[in-house]
Length: 159
Image (cartoon, rainbow, N blue to C red; front, side, top):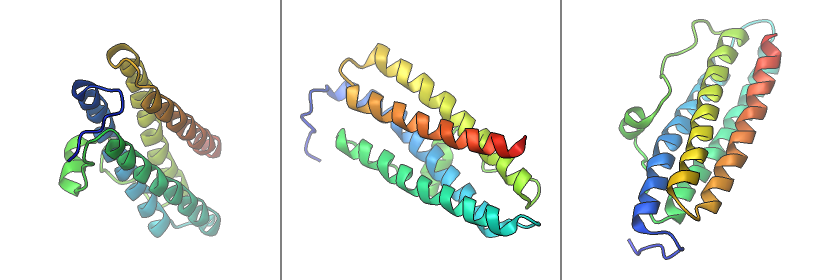
């Protein structure tokens, strides 16, 4: 692969890739869990929540693509196998205990919260270890805000 000559050293892009690869795994697993919730939801609020989960996985599909493309922009390949994702993710593949909206939403909320914490820690790490990583830092901040909005929506439903 041709080196990305974008004002970052190979060491700097390696640090960024080591942040983005687990993030990609987390986002993909969360996408899959939102799909599972959409497919398997049951209960009196089925239709409303079925539609909401579709909105969630559709948003996450774009996030997955964005993280993978961010890796490519800095000159690295994106991990793209389930084996890679399961080795890299911070999340649990464990399913919700029941197929109702409260169980699925609690599970999805916990994952969004975990990703928010990881993103916040990663933004701080970038600031300390990678001078001039403005694009990635801005990208991660915007992504964190998106997860915060979704977490707020899920948390509000659970009140």
